[in-house]
Amino acid sequence: MKKINKRDIIMNFLLIIVIFFAIRKGTDRFMVVFLFSSIIILECIYKRKVNFFDKRLIISYSIYGIFLIISYMKNPFDTDAIPRMLISSFLFFICLSQLEINEKFYKKILFIMSVLSLISSYRGFREWKEYDFSSSYRIMKAGWATIYNIEIGVYIFISLFCIFSLKNIYLKILSGMIFLFSCFVVIGTHSRTTFLLIPFLVLITFISFLVKNKKLNYKGLIFFFIILYLFCNISQVKQHTQRLSTLTSIEKIKEEARIKILIQGIEDFKNNNYKPLGYYHYYNHFTKEGIMKGMPHLHNNILEILVTQGKIAVISYILFQLFLFSALLKRSKESLIVEQKYIVYLAKILFVFINLAGIVDSNIYFFKVNLLVSIIYGLSFCKVIPEKLK
Image 1: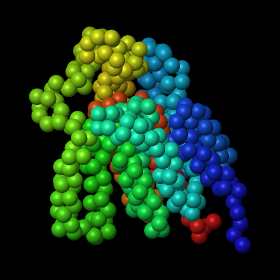
Image 2: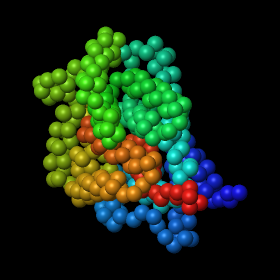
Image 3: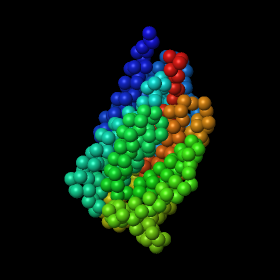
Image 4: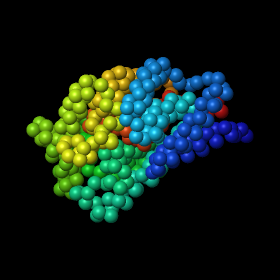
């Protein structure tokens, strides 16, 4: 009779609890994540070993973290902001990567996340339904539209990779239904960012999967593009993509508010003698008039960090992102179980998704989204114990 490992049962249960709190609405998720991270750290100290350690990641983010804290001292407004940012974007990812997870449970994690994502997706669906799925209404009550659309985008990719990685046909079908439901909900955000990025990255993922499995059929691909073109030209679909018309010419793009905001941010940086204005400066300094009216940030990660946190901070942040992607590429070439290879590939897709979205939004402040992505990063680098060794 196979011996039951109580440690595995407890840690697996706690990880599910963490995922649940990460997805549900509320700020108490960070306390739960902090406690779980503390347990992992204590376990590493007790065992006197770590599973994943990358000096480049730790040094680059440590430098960024130092200048982040310094910039916060110039603009202190929320005592919980910095801990949440550090936990969601780095610390939990590093802690989770030290975890040892048995293969049987590891294969179920992505599906568990996909099912739990319905907690958030249904909240947006219910809100949009109250407005009869109107094309003129953007889902707002479920979360800020600019944040919520990225969050749902993460769930879309998680459910998509469930379809690829799961072997049970019924779980595949359920994952496909969650995928379609999430896609429907994201339409309700009427976000130009997700309308452009998600179809593009989903297509890249499908093509990569077909190439890898030697199932790519060029006739089928042409047929797919024809169906996609016809689908996008249906009147019911067109009315939900009207906001994309603002990006159809250079002249229209130049008139975009976000372009003017970027220019304003550069001007503010120059006027301050190229010194940082302070962490999240625009959140409590935006004006009631002009282009920065009601704007809490500069809608661009790199410029936001440069203007509010400084030149060294932005350099260290860019280096961290480069080192992280390099580590993911290296990890994908290692000998891993099939399910972990899929999660590593998912991590790379989410990396691209988050960073491309960061060109038009300051998602460094989207703590919940960053925490969800950190979970995927952590699962990419954690150690999976094969069943035969249990």
